[in-house]
Length: 472
Image (cartoon, rainbow, N blue to C red):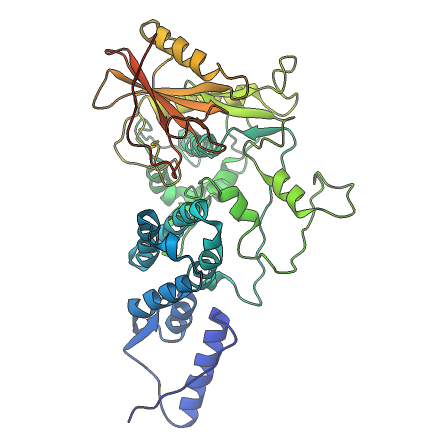
Protein backbone atom coordinates (compact mmCIF):
# COMPACT_ATOMS: atom_id res chain seq x y z
CA UNK A 1 0.00 0.00 0.00
CA UNK A 2 1.27 3.47 -0.92
CA UNK A 3 0.69 6.38 1.46
CA UNK A 4 -1.51 9.09 -0.03
CA UNK A 5 -2.04 12.62 1.25
CA UNK A 6 -5.06 14.72 0.30
CA UNK A 7 -4.84 18.48 0.74
CA UNK A 8 -7.64 20.99 0.09
CA UNK A 9 -5.91 24.23 -0.92
CA UNK A 10 -7.47 27.72 -1.05
CA UNK A 11 -5.69 28.64 -4.29
CA UNK A 12 -3.01 27.55 -6.75
CA UNK A 13 -0.28 30.02 -5.84
CA UNK A 14 3.36 28.96 -5.62
CA UNK A 15 3.46 30.14 -2.00
CA UNK A 16 0.55 27.85 -1.11
CA UNK A 17 2.12 24.82 -2.77
CA UNK A 18 5.42 25.50 -0.99
CA UNK A 19 3.71 25.74 2.41
CA UNK A 20 2.04 22.35 1.97
CA UNK A 21 5.19 20.63 0.68
CA UNK A 22 7.35 22.04 3.47
CA UNK A 23 4.83 20.84 6.05
CA UNK A 24 4.79 17.41 4.41
CA UNK A 25 8.60 17.15 4.44
CA UNK A 26 8.75 18.28 8.07
CA UNK A 27 6.10 15.74 9.11
CA UNK A 28 8.00 12.99 7.31
CA UNK A 29 11.24 13.93 9.07
CA UNK A 30 9.57 13.74 12.50
CA UNK A 31 8.62 10.18 11.59
CA UNK A 32 12.13 9.27 10.41
CA UNK A 33 11.15 9.36 6.74
CA UNK A 34 13.30 11.22 4.22
CA UNK A 35 11.36 12.45 1.20
CA UNK A 36 13.77 12.42 -1.73
CA UNK A 37 11.80 11.47 -4.87
CA UNK A 38 13.68 10.80 -8.10
CA UNK A 39 10.67 11.71 -10.27
CA UNK A 40 7.50 13.74 -9.76
CA UNK A 41 4.37 13.84 -11.93
CA UNK A 42 2.30 17.05 -11.77
CA UNK A 43 -0.18 19.01 -13.85
CA UNK A 44 0.94 21.73 -16.23
CA UNK A 45 1.09 24.53 -13.66
CA UNK A 46 4.09 26.81 -13.41
CA UNK A 47 3.40 27.58 -9.74
CA UNK A 48 3.38 23.89 -8.82
CA UNK A 49 6.54 23.28 -10.84
CA UNK A 50 8.40 26.10 -9.07
CA UNK A 51 7.37 24.85 -5.63
CA UNK A 52 8.36 21.23 -6.29
CA UNK A 53 11.61 22.22 -8.00
CA UNK A 54 12.59 24.44 -5.08
CA UNK A 55 12.04 21.70 -2.51
CA UNK A 56 13.23 18.76 -4.62
CA UNK A 57 15.88 20.24 -6.95
CA UNK A 58 17.31 16.86 -7.99
CA UNK A 59 13.98 15.29 -8.94
CA UNK A 60 12.93 14.81 -12.56
CA UNK A 61 9.61 16.66 -12.81
CA UNK A 62 7.20 15.33 -15.44
CA UNK A 63 3.96 16.93 -16.60
CA UNK A 64 0.58 15.36 -17.26
CA UNK A 65 -0.78 16.77 -20.51
CA UNK A 66 -3.94 14.69 -20.15
CA UNK A 67 -5.14 16.60 -17.09
CA UNK A 68 -4.23 19.92 -18.69
CA UNK A 69 -6.28 19.12 -21.79
CA UNK A 70 -9.12 17.79 -19.63
CA UNK A 71 -9.27 21.05 -17.66
CA UNK A 72 -9.26 23.12 -20.85
CA UNK A 73 -12.12 21.19 -22.44
CA UNK A 74 -14.10 21.25 -19.18
CA UNK A 75 -13.85 25.05 -19.08
CA UNK A 76 -14.87 25.36 -22.71
CA UNK A 77 -18.07 23.39 -22.12
CA UNK A 78 -19.10 25.87 -19.43
CA UNK A 79 -19.16 28.69 -22.00
CA UNK A 80 -22.23 27.29 -23.80
CA UNK A 81 -20.79 28.37 -27.14
CA UNK A 82 -21.47 25.17 -29.03
CA UNK A 83 -21.98 26.86 -32.41
CA UNK A 84 -18.74 28.82 -32.10
CA UNK A 85 -16.77 25.74 -31.05
CA UNK A 86 -17.76 24.03 -34.31
CA UNK A 87 -16.04 26.69 -36.43
CA UNK A 88 -12.71 25.74 -37.97
CA UNK A 89 -10.94 28.93 -36.93
CA UNK A 90 -12.07 28.43 -33.32
CA UNK A 91 -10.97 24.77 -33.36
CA UNK A 92 -7.58 25.89 -34.61
CA UNK A 93 -7.13 28.35 -31.74
CA UNK A 94 -8.28 25.79 -29.14
CA UNK A 95 -5.69 23.40 -30.57
CA UNK A 96 -3.12 26.17 -30.14
CA UNK A 97 -4.07 26.49 -26.47
CA UNK A 98 -3.71 22.73 -25.98
CA UNK A 99 -0.28 22.92 -27.62
CA UNK A 100 1.05 25.70 -25.37
CA UNK A 101 2.87 23.31 -22.96
CA UNK A 102 4.79 21.89 -25.91
CA UNK A 103 6.33 25.25 -26.83
CA UNK A 104 9.65 26.62 -25.53
CA UNK A 105 8.95 28.58 -22.31
CA UNK A 106 9.92 31.93 -23.85
CA UNK A 107 7.36 31.45 -26.65
CA UNK A 108 4.32 30.50 -24.56
CA UNK A 109 3.11 33.95 -23.50
CA UNK A 110 3.28 35.48 -26.98
CA UNK A 111 1.54 32.46 -28.53
CA UNK A 112 -1.21 32.57 -25.91
CA UNK A 113 -1.97 36.25 -26.47
CA UNK A 114 -2.12 35.67 -30.23
CA UNK A 115 -4.95 33.22 -29.50
CA UNK A 116 -6.56 35.75 -27.14
CA UNK A 117 -6.75 38.31 -29.94
CA UNK A 118 -8.32 35.88 -32.39
CA UNK A 119 -10.90 34.33 -30.02
CA UNK A 120 -11.98 37.68 -28.55
CA UNK A 121 -12.41 39.09 -32.05
CA UNK A 122 -14.70 36.14 -32.88
CA UNK A 123 -16.79 36.27 -29.71
CA UNK A 124 -16.21 38.30 -26.55
CA UNK A 125 -17.82 35.51 -24.52
CA UNK A 126 -14.55 33.57 -24.78
CA UNK A 127 -13.05 36.05 -22.30
CA UNK A 128 -13.87 34.09 -19.07
CA UNK A 129 -12.18 31.02 -20.53
CA UNK A 130 -9.13 33.01 -21.62
CA UNK A 131 -8.90 34.66 -18.21
CA UNK A 132 -8.92 31.22 -16.59
CA UNK A 133 -6.09 29.95 -18.81
CA UNK A 134 -4.06 33.10 -18.23
CA UNK A 135 -4.50 33.09 -14.46
CA UNK A 136 -4.00 29.34 -14.01
CA UNK A 137 -1.26 28.51 -16.49
CA UNK A 138 0.33 31.69 -17.85
CA UNK A 139 0.88 34.16 -15.01
CA UNK A 140 -0.01 32.10 -11.94
CA UNK A 141 3.58 31.76 -10.76
CA UNK A 142 3.98 35.53 -10.66
CA UNK A 143 0.91 36.18 -8.48
CA UNK A 144 1.22 35.49 -4.79
CA UNK A 145 -0.61 37.11 -1.92
CA UNK A 146 2.60 38.71 -0.60
CA UNK A 147 4.03 39.87 -3.89
CA UNK A 148 3.48 43.43 -5.11
CA UNK A 149 3.96 44.26 -8.79
CA UNK A 150 4.79 47.74 -10.01
CA UNK A 151 4.11 48.78 -13.59
CA UNK A 152 5.08 52.09 -15.11
CA UNK A 153 2.04 53.58 -16.87
CA UNK A 154 3.22 55.97 -19.55
CA UNK A 155 1.16 59.15 -20.01
CA UNK A 156 2.52 61.26 -22.86
CA UNK A 157 0.91 64.65 -23.39
CA UNK A 158 3.00 65.70 -26.40
CA UNK A 159 3.43 62.94 -28.99
CA UNK A 160 2.14 59.46 -29.88
CA UNK A 161 3.35 56.68 -32.16
CA UNK A 162 1.22 55.91 -35.19
CA UNK A 163 0.83 52.22 -34.28
CA UNK A 164 2.63 49.36 -32.56
CA UNK A 165 4.51 48.42 -35.71
CA UNK A 166 6.13 51.85 -35.84
CA UNK A 167 6.70 51.80 -32.09
CA UNK A 168 8.44 48.41 -32.22
CA UNK A 169 10.67 49.39 -35.15
CA UNK A 170 11.57 52.64 -33.39
CA UNK A 171 12.42 50.90 -30.09
CA UNK A 172 14.54 48.26 -31.80
CA UNK A 173 16.32 50.90 -33.87
CA UNK A 174 17.12 52.93 -30.75
CA UNK A 175 18.34 49.85 -28.84
CA UNK A 176 20.56 48.82 -31.75
CA UNK A 177 21.85 52.39 -32.04
CA UNK A 178 22.83 52.81 -28.39
CA UNK A 179 24.44 49.36 -28.14
CA UNK A 180 26.39 50.09 -31.32
CA UNK A 181 27.42 53.46 -29.88
CA UNK A 182 28.77 51.75 -26.77
CA UNK A 183 30.95 49.49 -28.92
CA UNK A 184 32.12 52.39 -31.09
CA UNK A 185 33.11 54.62 -28.17
CA UNK A 186 36.78 54.70 -27.18
CA UNK A 187 38.28 55.44 -23.78
CA UNK A 188 41.24 54.37 -21.64
CA UNK A 189 39.23 51.41 -20.29
CA UNK A 190 37.44 50.31 -23.47
CA UNK A 191 38.94 50.25 -26.96
CA UNK A 192 37.82 47.39 -29.20
CA UNK A 193 37.17 46.79 -32.89
CA UNK A 194 33.96 45.19 -34.12
CA UNK A 195 32.17 45.03 -37.48
CA UNK A 196 28.71 46.49 -36.93
CA UNK A 197 27.46 46.22 -40.50
CA UNK A 198 25.46 43.01 -40.17
CA UNK A 199 25.07 42.70 -36.42
CA UNK A 200 21.75 42.00 -34.75
CA UNK A 201 20.89 43.09 -31.22
CA UNK A 202 21.74 39.60 -29.85
CA UNK A 203 25.10 39.83 -31.65
CA UNK A 204 25.86 43.13 -29.93
CA UNK A 205 24.89 41.73 -26.52
CA UNK A 206 27.14 38.70 -26.97
CA UNK A 207 30.05 40.93 -27.95
CA UNK A 208 29.54 43.32 -25.01
CA UNK A 209 29.04 40.57 -22.41
CA UNK A 210 32.70 40.25 -21.32
CA UNK A 211 32.93 44.02 -20.84
CA UNK A 212 29.72 44.71 -18.87
CA UNK A 213 31.38 45.17 -15.47
CA UNK A 214 34.16 47.29 -16.98
CA UNK A 215 31.64 49.60 -18.66
CA UNK A 216 29.46 49.91 -15.56
CA UNK A 217 32.34 50.79 -13.23
CA UNK A 218 34.76 52.76 -15.41
CA UNK A 219 32.63 54.52 -18.06
CA UNK A 220 30.59 56.80 -15.80
CA UNK A 221 32.16 59.83 -17.50
CA UNK A 222 31.75 58.51 -21.04
CA UNK A 223 28.68 59.69 -22.94
CA UNK A 224 26.95 59.03 -26.22
CA UNK A 225 27.88 61.67 -28.78
CA UNK A 226 25.58 64.71 -28.55
CA UNK A 227 23.78 63.13 -25.60
CA UNK A 228 23.70 63.20 -21.81
CA UNK A 229 23.35 59.41 -21.57
CA UNK A 230 26.24 57.67 -19.84
CA UNK A 231 27.85 54.59 -21.35
CA UNK A 232 27.75 53.09 -17.85
CA UNK A 233 23.97 53.57 -17.73
CA UNK A 234 23.53 51.80 -21.05
CA UNK A 235 25.61 48.87 -19.76
CA UNK A 236 22.95 48.33 -17.10
CA UNK A 237 20.44 47.54 -19.88
CA UNK A 238 22.21 44.20 -20.28
CA UNK A 239 21.40 41.86 -17.40
CA UNK A 240 21.60 38.17 -16.56
CA UNK A 241 18.42 36.17 -17.11
CA UNK A 242 17.23 33.08 -15.21
CA UNK A 243 19.60 30.91 -17.23
CA UNK A 244 22.45 33.19 -16.06
CA UNK A 245 23.01 34.40 -19.62
CA UNK A 246 23.39 38.02 -20.61
CA UNK A 247 20.26 39.44 -22.21
CA UNK A 248 18.49 42.74 -22.75
CA UNK A 249 16.55 44.10 -19.77
CA UNK A 250 13.90 45.36 -22.19
CA UNK A 251 11.53 42.71 -23.54
CA UNK A 252 11.44 43.28 -27.30
CA UNK A 253 8.81 40.59 -27.86
CA UNK A 254 5.89 42.35 -26.20
CA UNK A 255 4.67 44.39 -29.16
CA UNK A 256 1.28 43.29 -30.46
CA UNK A 257 -2.08 44.85 -31.27
CA UNK A 258 -3.37 44.93 -27.68
CA UNK A 259 -0.18 44.92 -25.65
CA UNK A 260 -0.61 48.45 -24.29
CA UNK A 261 -4.02 47.44 -22.90
CA UNK A 262 -2.61 44.35 -21.20
CA UNK A 263 -0.01 46.40 -19.36
CA UNK A 264 -2.71 48.21 -17.38
CA UNK A 265 -5.55 45.70 -17.38
CA UNK A 266 -4.04 42.29 -16.71
CA UNK A 267 -3.05 40.20 -13.70
CA UNK A 268 -3.92 42.76 -11.02
CA UNK A 269 -7.43 43.47 -12.25
CA UNK A 270 -9.96 43.31 -9.44
CA UNK A 271 -7.40 43.90 -6.69
CA UNK A 272 -7.39 47.06 -4.62
CA UNK A 273 -4.02 48.35 -5.78
CA UNK A 274 -3.77 52.12 -5.82
CA UNK A 275 -1.86 54.24 -8.33
CA UNK A 276 1.23 56.15 -7.25
CA UNK A 277 1.27 59.45 -9.12
CA UNK A 278 4.50 60.90 -10.44
CA UNK A 279 5.32 64.62 -10.37
CA UNK A 280 4.42 64.93 -14.06
CA UNK A 281 1.20 62.93 -13.79
CA UNK A 282 -1.28 64.64 -16.16
CA UNK A 283 -4.26 64.16 -13.80
CA UNK A 284 -2.77 66.06 -10.86
CA UNK A 285 -5.81 68.35 -10.56
CA UNK A 286 -8.33 65.50 -10.33
CA UNK A 287 -9.68 64.35 -7.00
CA UNK A 288 -10.71 61.06 -8.60
CA UNK A 289 -9.21 59.38 -11.63
CA UNK A 290 -11.65 57.52 -13.93
CA UNK A 291 -10.36 54.14 -15.04
CA UNK A 292 -11.06 54.79 -18.74
CA UNK A 293 -9.29 58.13 -18.64
CA UNK A 294 -6.13 56.70 -17.12
CA UNK A 295 -6.14 53.86 -19.64
CA UNK A 296 -6.67 56.21 -22.57
CA UNK A 297 -3.92 58.59 -21.49
CA UNK A 298 -1.51 55.71 -20.88
CA UNK A 299 -1.57 54.69 -24.54
CA UNK A 300 1.55 55.60 -26.47
CA UNK A 301 0.12 54.75 -29.88
CA UNK A 302 -2.49 56.58 -31.92
CA UNK A 303 -5.96 56.89 -30.41
CA UNK A 304 -8.78 58.53 -32.35
CA UNK A 305 -10.08 60.11 -29.14
CA UNK A 306 -6.79 61.96 -28.63
CA UNK A 307 -6.53 64.28 -31.62
CA UNK A 308 -4.43 67.08 -30.13
CA UNK A 309 -1.09 65.25 -30.14
CA UNK A 310 1.58 64.97 -32.78
CA UNK A 311 2.05 61.54 -34.38
CA UNK A 312 5.43 59.90 -35.00
CA UNK A 313 5.11 57.69 -38.06
CA UNK A 314 7.29 55.77 -40.52
CA UNK A 315 7.31 57.03 -44.11
CA UNK A 316 9.72 55.87 -46.81
CA UNK A 317 11.90 54.25 -44.13
CA UNK A 318 12.22 57.49 -42.17
CA UNK A 319 10.66 58.43 -38.84
CA UNK A 320 8.65 61.62 -39.25
CA UNK A 321 6.32 63.69 -37.12
CA UNK A 322 2.82 64.48 -38.29
CA UNK A 323 1.77 67.81 -36.75
CA UNK A 324 -1.62 68.52 -35.25
CA UNK A 325 -2.01 71.36 -37.73
CA UNK A 326 0.04 72.91 -40.51
CA UNK A 327 1.05 75.89 -38.35
CA UNK A 328 2.94 73.78 -35.82
CA UNK A 329 5.34 71.41 -37.54
CA UNK A 330 7.01 70.00 -34.43
CA UNK A 331 6.07 70.06 -30.75
CA UNK A 332 8.35 72.71 -29.32
CA UNK A 333 10.83 71.45 -26.74
CA UNK A 334 9.80 67.79 -26.97
CA UNK A 335 11.81 66.51 -29.95
CA UNK A 336 15.53 66.92 -30.56
CA UNK A 337 15.67 66.89 -34.35
CA UNK A 338 19.39 66.10 -34.34
CA UNK A 339 18.75 62.92 -32.35
CA UNK A 340 15.80 62.00 -34.59
CA UNK A 341 17.96 62.51 -37.68
CA UNK A 342 20.68 60.35 -36.12
CA UNK A 343 18.16 57.59 -35.43
CA UNK A 344 16.85 57.85 -39.00
CA UNK A 345 20.37 57.58 -40.38
CA UNK A 346 21.07 54.51 -38.27
CA UNK A 347 17.71 52.95 -39.17
CA UNK A 348 18.30 53.49 -42.87
CA UNK A 349 21.86 52.15 -42.91
CA UNK A 350 21.49 49.09 -40.68
CA UNK A 351 17.81 48.13 -40.58
CA UNK A 352 16.94 48.71 -44.23
CA UNK A 353 19.88 48.39 -46.61
CA UNK A 354 21.43 45.46 -44.73
CA UNK A 355 18.46 44.42 -42.64
CA UNK A 356 18.15 40.98 -41.14
CA UNK A 357 15.80 42.19 -38.42
CA UNK A 358 12.47 43.41 -39.70
CA UNK A 359 9.58 41.45 -41.15
CA UNK A 360 5.83 41.77 -40.96
CA UNK A 361 4.01 38.73 -39.53
CA UNK A 362 0.50 37.69 -38.57
CA UNK A 363 1.16 37.27 -34.87
CA UNK A 364 2.25 40.72 -33.82
CA UNK A 365 3.15 42.46 -37.06
CA UNK A 366 6.82 42.51 -36.18
CA UNK A 367 9.30 39.75 -35.49
CA UNK A 368 13.05 39.25 -35.49
CA UNK A 369 14.23 37.10 -38.36
CA UNK A 370 17.67 35.93 -39.39
CA UNK A 371 19.10 36.50 -42.85
CA UNK A 372 16.01 38.27 -44.21
CA UNK A 373 16.46 41.30 -46.47
CA UNK A 374 13.58 43.72 -47.02
CA UNK A 375 13.58 45.47 -50.41
CA UNK A 376 12.33 48.89 -49.37
CA UNK A 377 11.90 51.43 -52.16
CA UNK A 378 12.15 55.18 -52.37
CA UNK A 379 8.62 56.10 -53.47
CA UNK A 380 9.93 59.22 -55.17
CA UNK A 381 11.91 57.21 -57.74
CA UNK A 382 10.95 58.28 -61.22
CA UNK A 383 10.17 54.77 -62.50
CA UNK A 384 7.50 54.17 -59.84
CA UNK A 385 6.30 57.75 -59.38
CA UNK A 386 3.19 57.12 -61.48
CA UNK A 387 2.25 54.17 -59.26
CA UNK A 388 2.91 56.22 -56.14
CA UNK A 389 0.66 59.00 -57.44
CA UNK A 390 -2.07 56.48 -58.26
CA UNK A 391 -1.97 54.91 -54.79
CA UNK A 392 -1.88 58.33 -53.12
CA UNK A 393 -4.96 59.41 -55.06
CA UNK A 394 -6.76 56.17 -54.19
CA UNK A 395 -6.17 56.38 -50.43
CA UNK A 396 -7.15 60.05 -50.19
CA UNK A 397 -10.28 59.92 -52.38
CA UNK A 398 -12.59 59.42 -49.36
CA UNK A 399 -12.56 62.46 -47.07
CA UNK A 400 -13.71 60.30 -44.15
CA UNK A 401 -10.95 57.72 -44.60
CA UNK A 402 -7.69 59.48 -45.36
CA UNK A 403 -4.56 57.37 -45.64
CA UNK A 404 -0.92 57.80 -46.52
CA UNK A 405 1.88 55.61 -47.87
CA UNK A 406 3.81 54.20 -44.93
CA UNK A 407 6.38 52.27 -46.95
CA UNK A 408 6.85 50.55 -50.28
CA UNK A 409 8.42 47.11 -50.71
CA UNK A 410 9.32 45.27 -53.90
CA UNK A 411 8.35 41.60 -54.13
CA UNK A 412 11.04 39.03 -53.33
CA UNK A 413 9.96 36.42 -55.86
CA UNK A 414 8.10 38.66 -58.30
CA UNK A 415 10.03 41.89 -58.78
CA UNK A 416 7.27 43.44 -60.85
CA UNK A 417 5.04 43.63 -57.75
CA UNK A 418 5.11 46.66 -55.47
CA UNK A 419 3.63 46.43 -51.96
CA UNK A 420 2.43 49.79 -50.64
CA UNK A 421 1.81 49.55 -46.87
CA UNK A 422 -0.90 52.06 -45.97
CA UNK A 423 -1.16 54.01 -42.73
CA UNK A 424 -3.81 56.36 -41.40
CA UNK A 425 -7.56 55.77 -41.60
CA UNK A 426 -7.75 54.14 -45.04
CA UNK A 427 -8.83 50.58 -44.16
CA UNK A 428 -10.95 49.55 -47.15
CA UNK A 429 -11.76 45.84 -47.36
CA UNK A 430 -12.81 44.55 -50.82
CA UNK A 431 -14.46 41.51 -49.24
CA UNK A 432 -16.55 43.65 -46.88
CA UNK A 433 -17.08 46.48 -49.37
CA UNK A 434 -16.37 49.11 -46.72
CA UNK A 435 -13.77 50.19 -44.18
CA UNK A 436 -12.92 48.26 -41.02
CA UNK A 437 -12.34 50.13 -37.78
CA UNK A 438 -8.98 48.70 -36.75
CA UNK A 439 -7.43 46.76 -39.63
CA UNK A 440 -4.60 47.81 -41.93
CA UNK A 441 -4.26 47.33 -45.67
CA UNK A 442 -1.61 46.96 -48.32
CA UNK A 443 -2.08 47.91 -51.96
CA UNK A 444 -0.34 45.56 -54.40
CA UNK A 445 0.59 46.97 -57.81
CA UNK A 446 1.62 44.84 -60.78
CA UNK A 447 3.93 47.18 -62.70
CA UNK A 448 3.96 44.96 -65.79
CA UNK A 449 0.24 44.24 -66.13
CA UNK A 450 -0.72 47.71 -64.80
CA UNK A 451 -3.20 46.26 -62.32
CA UNK A 452 -3.70 46.63 -58.56
CA UNK A 453 -5.47 44.92 -55.68
CA UNK A 454 -6.16 45.78 -52.05
CA UNK A 455 -5.12 43.27 -49.40
CA UNK A 456 -7.06 43.51 -46.13
CA UNK A 457 -5.05 42.37 -43.10
CA UNK A 458 -8.04 41.88 -40.79
CA UNK A 459 -7.88 38.42 -39.19
CA UNK A 460 -11.64 37.88 -39.46
CA UNK A 461 -11.68 38.40 -43.21
CA UNK A 462 -8.99 35.89 -44.07
CA UNK A 463 -8.88 37.56 -47.47
CA UNK A 464 -6.59 35.41 -49.62
CA UNK A 465 -8.52 35.72 -52.92
CA UNK A 466 -7.39 38.96 -54.53
CA UNK A 467 -9.46 40.90 -57.05
CA UNK A 468 -7.20 42.69 -59.52
CA UNK A 469 -8.33 45.94 -61.11
CA UNK A 470 -6.91 47.90 -64.02
CA UNK A 471 -4.94 51.06 -63.24
CA UNK A 472 -6.59 53.83 -65.20
